[in-house]
Amino acid sequence: MTLSVHNYVGNDSDNPRRTDRVDVGSGGDRPLRRSGDTRRPLIGITASMRGGRWMAAFNHLAVRRAGGIPVKITPGNARDIDRVDALIIGGGDDISATLYGGTLNPTIRIDPDRDAFEQKALERSIDRDQPVLGICRGAQMMNVVLGGTLHEDIYSAFPNLPRMRTPLPRKTVTVTAGSRLSTLLGTEKCRVNALHHQSVDRVASGLTVVACDSFGIVQAVEAKAPGHWIGVQWHPEFLVFDTRQQALFRDLVARCHDRSAHPGRHG
Image (tube, rainbow, N blue to C red; front, top):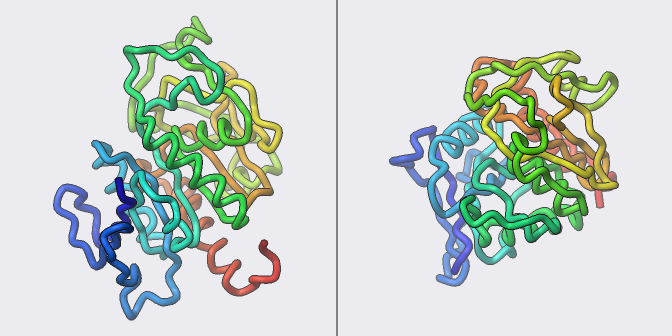
């Protein structure tokens, strides 16, 4: 299996127009930036080899609007993660319970190749002190990689929880005052969408919970180190017209510019 790195223009994931493609193992080594994009950071967006087209399309749009160049990264050889300036660990299938000592449910679809790939990607980002935004599954993977665990099914863990699955902002979450997330969003209350049935359980020692819903389910985590990680349980890429949510992508791009301007501040 090879690592495919795709640079997409626009937001039509079914018929993307590629400016460049690099396939490690096939000898490709063309640049991911076009000549006029030298100052725009490369934002790697992890994804599965299967499905997830809408999430990919909206993430690419959000990164473009924020001033970055979206780069789709799929499972394979992790060496070329060094080509990007920051990472978005995107949403998708459940994380295998074997990674955090849980019980594997054979009826739940998992993606072992992606699990292994994203573990390596996050471990590499720690070494590089790299900015990372985790979205839904991505926030959960942050927690797992740093030693935390997950609720394998929130409806089993929270019996009174009403079932909700919507890309629309129907859930209210409370954000911790003084957290980086509250500063970015400019509020301590926000409405978000809900497309998950797993969530953070035991929080890794390197992370801090900075948002919860009314049932106490963890909705966001962050860490000053490594790399100023922020993970949210919702999908901000779908909240296209919410400028507060889009600030998460603008912050990621801004951190890349800061790293370029002040390389001595970062490992």
